[in-house]
Image 1: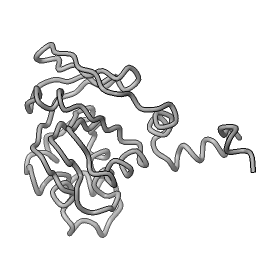
Image 2: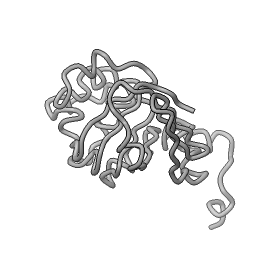
Image 3: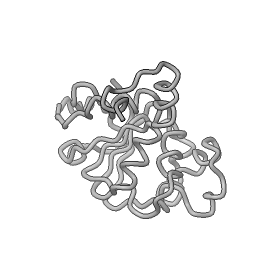
Length: 173
């Protein structure tokens, strides 16, 4: 379970607002984190704390298909992004780097910046701790949780190669 302070944003937060294009020449997570959301919120990069949670409206992460945006968010210490909906490529990129993202319009409707929120990925629950309101979402399938818990698709694959543990259907030719 992740519990953190909420950073609330509106609909259609695009990847250029998450990490401006002038910083796309680097893939260094610390460098990206230091400029995360500066196109939208000039205080975010300096005030975000490990474990904080971004809550946003519809179509979060629209725009570029680069992994820089979810990488910047994760490197800034955000442990989860909750939104009404996500751009599909952002959704895939976030899972691929091990950043949990949750679709829960009800949680978005009740959240405000500065509130405390708890997200339980395993059980599919979100609690707005400040308002003492509990909501649910569809939890990730087991294989996606394994990718997230491993730290992303590359780490997941390395672990599986090192242990020889692959799902049976993958081992058949």
